[in-house]
Length: 506
Ligand SMILES: *[C@@H]1O[C@H](CO)[C@@H](O)[C@H](O)[C@H]1NC(C)=O
Image 1 (cartoon, rainbow, N blue to C red):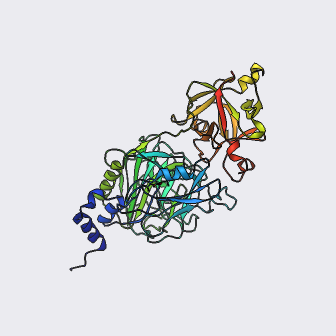
Image 2 (cartoon, helix red, strand yellow):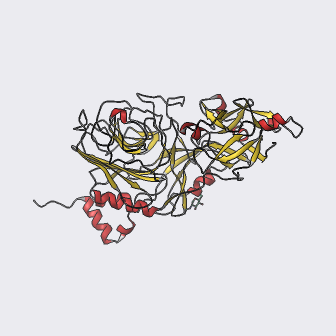
Image 3 (tube, rainbow, N blue to C red):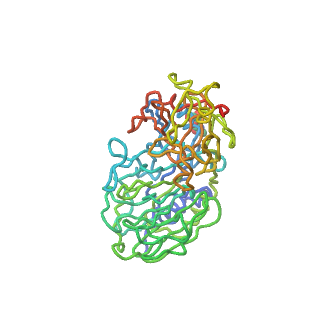
């Protein structure tokens, strides 16, 4: 039989003829491989060589205005300068992650689901801070999507994504050092009603140390790339701990999951060098996963039923129609490596120096003689001066340490209680002894930026970057600029989160 050439092979031919395959983006490569992107999301760069449209939208805290961030050039890196100038002296949230495929499969704030209602007054999940995940791509600054627990994006009204047992491919570039065991840091295909509608109703990339709901994990202690197929994270075929699905240790990770009738695969690699390895390729698990019942909605940072206790960072990812070949994915990996992802500073403004003793003075008009201090485990502000008692001076003095949970940021050790650090717990700032746990380390890690009111520094939670140290009624919190808690009040926010840092009293 003689058949008409497909649109995709015509496109592939066109790319070769014009010589632009060398510049092809990930979605140009998938298209030439016969598995075109039907959703393409990235806050860091265009995923098509010719794409010049919006990558994402940010909304700022000062007036609620929004702006679309576009690539610097066709196919290029996001214009981070546009975000930095729009968000200067205020906070910004990522409100939309645009679909570059032209199908309108944009990701927005995830609605409540079967497992969880978000903390937003309408039950929606939180939106991500626009500044939680700065990186560079070949030296140009861009921002990823830093997902804290209770944060998630979704699209339940999709066009063109795989349903039922239809084939699809997925890849995502993630931060290999940002994960937890909570359910579920996912990117991919999920239920259209935000409820668990049964085994096989999802096919998404999962990254973290979740135990797979009894379906097994990879080798070592994790994190692992696995597949969330609903009611189970899978590293291979049930019920195994797949020794070929390794613990990931690279800072930037390329994660791949793909599936077609009674065949699926997990692949992965370092997003900055080398090639992809295949961690599983074979038949579907039994028990409702063959055939699959994919529904086609798209999730980021949450489970299919809106389970929202996971954390992770997303830079870019796609969903394809069709089962991409390993060769096609290998070419996409080469493109990702060539994009040149690298870590960059998480701090700005007046520099903090590990090992130095500091005091932090409030700048709100009410309170300019008050300093961040503690009484037992409670962090508060107290009026301190050079004539205060030695005990009070010590309560208001902190030694800057390399961040316990991320060495690019800082932790603050109590000068009068060595071994105890400022950490957040239920959004309150506390002084607690370091118990060495991952949770404590992350709760006690803060990044520093120029004070939002133009004075001194603002101290941002590393793990919840929408939240900053704030004094409110003389107590310490991590607060967002507007939000469900009384201490999230937008009034006076910039002043309450800005502190002038000087040499410690003691
Ligand atoms: C990036 O954004 C800035 C600020 O909006 C703008 O002045 C500049 O022209 C943009 N750069 C490009 C290459 O579009």
